[in-house]
Image 1 (cartoon, rainbow, N blue to C red):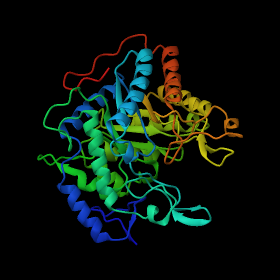
Image 2: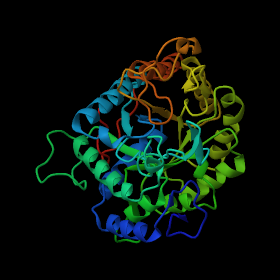
Image 3: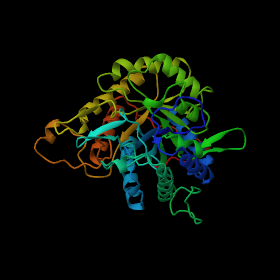
Image 4: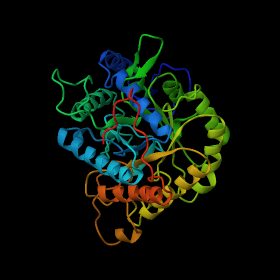
Length: 417
């Protein structure tokens, strides 16, 4: 099998293994000829809004599917996902008295990095599910085959979502303006380079933007300083984010900041901390302080989920609510004490009434539990609001909501309220 073809001459981890490289090249040419999913002016507007977060004048809630399902890209599903973001934003705004920027893990979250390339299912070894952009979740050899045609179906599905979110000028927007202004910005992990690289577009002034999403992030497994993924996001005007875990060193994080934010521009770079509840207070302060001393005005987001995954008695992965709450509290203490900007939350959520995350592992004993996630355990709406309330409670206790923050700058698109 051939590795994915890229336009960069640096290591590219977590890439699909396609059977037919020539087919991949043809599909990349098709994607490069298609309209971008987001407009450059909207990307720049979001970056201006995020500059207000970096200065302490607004917050971000970034939430949505662990792995998007193309079957859930219709208007009804998109509306339900947006409603969860609305609830989370309202919870944060009530305590902080600040605008809250709503960002979905949506319109492109079709690929997942995995810790192992294969798994055993029913006594046989299969390629692991890597998201609908690469293969299917069904435990059969045919479904698990890495199929490059999924790059095109992912683009089509993402375009449908953009239209349902109301974004003018997206690839699939109609000629008539949508009835409402967009409320939700889009984001996803920029992982599969055979999808992302063809979506890079020229601005005409020696600058480029990534047309697949408003706000790409690079994951913990692909953030190598000498890697292809950092090359991708270093060369675009989009705001970018990077996930950092407990093994991150001061040298690594300052190197990331220098590479991605050399001009020290507020709103350009966000760091998403996924430390784990038991490690956040010990590991995060030194990183925050190092970034601050280097002069980078980054936004710090808390991802309280990925560092706190455990296996339940039924063999399924889960996350404990109180453990995630502890990470949020520890994150807020660590970032504020070290002089950083705690800008909001990054959560995996579903609008469905599932029980994938729990208060206690005993919930799984002797009962069937409803799940909908294609990969990792997600928060249902009630649980997601409860975690947002943890942040809000700390804000209230620290007096963060005592004085209203200034409104976002006139040059920015207004933050939806």
